[in-house]
Length: 340
Ligand SMILES: [Zn+2]
Image (cartoon, rainbow, N blue to C red):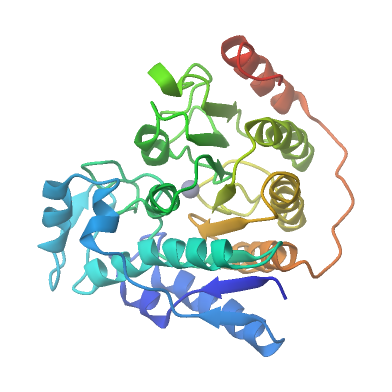
């Protein structure tokens, strides 16, 4: 077994108002999936909690203080982002789980992988604001932590159906962290256009693949073949993966048509790039995924790939027109940096 899952029953203690898609049942799915993994000999460990110093690598101290003050209370931080009395402590564990994964993977042998199976998600959280169900940007905090541990190049791949605006802005002028995202566009949160490519020294190190609604398995297969080639050129020392499963065909929020089995193939492409570049080091972290059955199935598919068990499904065939138009848009703005 090469995968360790970092998760906690505490992720069920973050409560949202009735009818909210980012609901407690998602934590129950995670608990069930972790129990299955443990039952077949997999390692499941408790995450550590992020410290103020860890959060402050990404978030403004005044913002951290504002979230800390919600401890013990139910507060609306954003039109769709809420706290419950335990949310602050739970959010510290969600960010900490990514750092636990980074420590684990950096200490491990070749092919050591980690999955932070957490809620609340993180990739929409910006330096000074909660957004889109996210309080702290778990994956950005993990990437900044990896940099603080001495890594020179970290890649973040984000296959959640929504653009990871918070992650993008955290490293927008930073050439040491490559951010590569595929996402439905136009769509929430509105960012992620092909011409958002980074700024200053970070120019070219933000790679956006905006995809029209209706994207197929074959579209995503094509996009992630190209993504893998970018990763191999960047030569990261660690790859972090925002593993959101809301591009699934059954997801109530996303408008894509990705199958459960395709999430195995996308995860495998990221892992293969890591095998080439960085001794297979991958830390995945959950983001969205709001159909409970699709979430469970996609998590299992990704876990089997991260763990190196299971057989990969065959490559999909079918319409790739959305991938081709996404790549054409990306090429217009990125061709001086990457061959896409
Ligand atoms: Zn999402």
